[in-house]
Length: 138
Image (cartoon, rainbow, N blue to C red):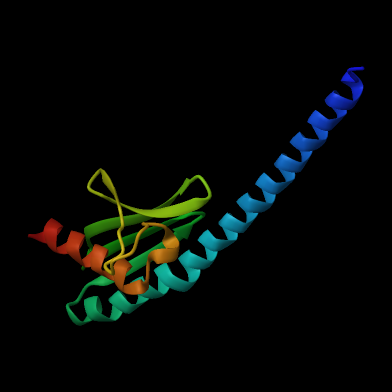
């Protein structure tokens, strides 16, 4: 005989389990994003600071949640603005650059099969920044 109570109970138990596993996965992804920003992105920009100072430019770095904003200043003038934003796509996160109102993905320089933050290294971040900076100043 069909036991609707048991089926309903089973349904809600599976939903609770899914919510728990989704919450755990989301928390894990948020930790990965935070680690990526702190251990890869900020040091990449810090490395650029020194080279820009030699040319009398200052690089300001501001972190806000899952966004890193940078501004290159020459004297009192903001010369270049570059943002790195994180976008979650399923169970992965990708880094996007936002320059002059245009958004595009930051791809790893090394041949890799994905564009997730796990594939990016500091040189990928620097290369993206330098490419956009030169194009903007061009």
